[in-house]
Each structure stands twice: as structure tokens, then as C-alpha cells.
Image (cartoon, rainbow, N blue to C red; front, side, top):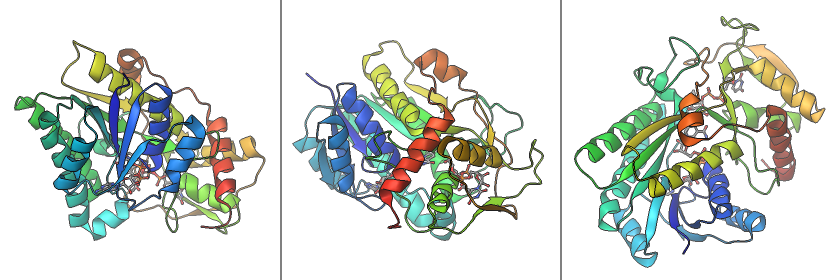
Length: 342
Ligand code: NAD
Ligand code: UD1
């Protein structure tokens, strides 16, 4: 019988791509999402790609009664991947309680219900933001956690601690915490992708909207950093590579007998790319010019960070594989599918 996985936030960007990979790997998926940052048409995209329509519950994970109903009406859920969270860094500074409530109550509700419903493992979406500005790159999982610079970042640090404390207390569950670097791109079918609401804050959606003529010009936030071309460096990871890692993590938790109860992995490529290099790779891959100008630094930006993914490579047997040019073509195909509507 297929193992059943609950994907919270499953109509969102990373959740939808992960659902596709879970279905392709033979899992049955139940999605819960409150559609606060996504829409139900995403389910059609998942069905069009996989031929399977995942069960969908429209509901809010901060409401424990809703979750209890879900576990009762979908018995036998073996594992959870928890994507449901609010994720806009700037908004979290304006509305800290919304972020603490949504991100932390969601996690605590799920943890509390897991033993009651016999759910054995939870994969948690964390972020490289927990490292702050690294003392050295590439950065591995043993690097110190730095004071969070936003309530959003703080929710990720606190969530990691909540999971660790709960499991240390003897809760009969396992967890794999995944620290994502910068996820970008879309499914190669262009049937699902990232749906930015309003003016994008992140680089790739802003870049593709500029290439499409929706935005006049991309601003490169600073070219006077201490990097080879002066612009900031990040580790951009393809969304399909990222999604695949979740499937491997879930299988490891559910089927691996001797694994530690809590494990933490960096998910990155191990290669840092500057903002200017990323723009160049987009132009080379698509043949489309991106009008840009050099602007001021963005407050709070990290100068450079990229992952040491050795632990994930060796322990999970996972490696980022998609060349960045393919990722850029997929991001562009998705943008063209979205059209001028945003
Ligand atoms: P997203 O906003 O596209 O997806 C999150 C989904 O969760 C959305 O569909 C939203 O409607 C839903 N949701 C939010 N609160 C909910 C609630 N209380 N109940 C039910 N559904 C709820 O974001 P994403 O980029 O797919 O991110 C997924 C996870 O990965 C988040 O936890 C995010 O913090 C984390 N993460 C994302 C990035 C990134 O760059 N995208 C980087 C590091 C970590
Ligand atoms: C953002 C989040 C971080 C999250 C990470 C993962 C912030 C402050 N941080 O980080 O918490 O974990 O995503 O995806 O939002 N840039 C431009 N012009 C633009 C937009 C961005 O030059 O219009 C540059 C930025 O200065 C940065 C790079 O592009 O150097 C990437 O920016 P972005 O996509 O916002 O991601 P992060 O800042 O890495």
C-alpha cells in the first residue's frame, strides 16, 4: 500500500513541486493549505503533470481542530512535510505577531498531534538565514547560528529548537530539518511555479518580470561588496532538486531504522553565484536581455553565502544536478505562461 504523506502548504511554491516528486516516487499525498499565498488551480497543475489528483483540504494549520479532523478523515498518515508558513522577511518586521503565531503555532499543532495519530516523521523547512553573515564559506551545518535579523528568521531558529526540545523530551517521532539556500526556477512543464504576489522582493521573479516587460528595470542592490564583481553572492538551487531532497528525507525517516531522531541538512549546490552572474546566465540561457541598473545596497543583505552540501550529498545520497541555465529557462517558461497578468 502507498504510504500517505501530509504536505502542509502544499499548493505553495516548494510544496507543489514536492508533491509532484512525492507522487512520482509512489507516495499518496494529502495537502492542507489555507490559500493565503497560493490558489487551488495549483492542484490542476499537479494533476496535469502526474496524472494523480492529490487530496486537498482547504484549512488553516493554526487551528488544531481542523488538523484533528484531517487526521481523522485521512487515517494512516505516515509522515508530514511542513511548508505552511508566512515567509516575507519585510512583512515579518511590520507584523511580527502574525509571523510568530502562524509559523510557530502551525508547527506546534502538528507536533502535538503526531503521536496521537501515529505519525512517525516530520520534515521541516528551515533556511540558510539561520547562519546570518557567515564567518567563512562554504558553510556547513556545524556553523554557529547567528542572532536572527527578522522575526521571520527568528521563527526558523525557534522552530528548529522546538523540534529538538520536543524530541529530546521523548516524543516518539523523527524529524529532518532542511536548511534551504535560495530556491529558484519552476517545473520544466511550466504547469507549476512560483506565484509572486504584488511586486516581487526576490531576485528571480523580479528578473523574469523585468524580462517580460512587466517591470521597467531590475535594480542590482549594490556593486561595492567585497566579492569578485562587487554584487552579493548566493547559492541558487533549482526547485526540482530541492523537491527531490524532501522525498529522500521522508523515505529515510520512514524506512531508515538506525537514523538519529533529529537530523539537519543544508540544501544547496555548493556554488556561489553573484547577482550579475545570475543575470548573465539568464540572458545566455534565454537570449532575452534584462534591463538593469546598479542601485544602493539593500538594508540587512548578507554579502555572501553558499552551502557546503557534503552532508546531504553523502548521508542522503542527494546532489543538486540541474544546471543553472536549465533553471533559468524553466523560470522564463513559467513567467511566459503567467503572461502579463501580474
Ligand atoms: P509559499 O508561500 O509559496 O508556500 C507556503 C504555503 O503555505 C502557501 O500556499 C500558503 O497559502 C500556505 N500557508 C501559510 N500559512 C498557512 C497556514 N497557517 N495553514 C495552511 N496553509 C498555510 O512559500 P514557499 O516558498 O513554498 O516556502 C515553503 C516553506 O519553505 C516556508 O516554510 C518557507 O519559510 C520555507 N523557505 C522558503 C524559502 C524560499 O526562498 N522560498 C527559503 C527558505 C525556507
Ligand atoms: C531571502 C530572504 C531569506 C530567505 C532567502 C531564501 C530577505 C532579506 N531574505 O534572501 O530570509 O531565507 O531569501 O530564499 O528577503 N537582489 C537584487 N535586486 C532585487 C532583488 C534581489 O539585486 O530586486 C539581490 C539581493 O541583494 C541578494 C540576491 O539578489 O543579493 C538574492 O536576493 P533574494 O532573492 O531576495 O534572496 P535573499 O536575500 O538571499
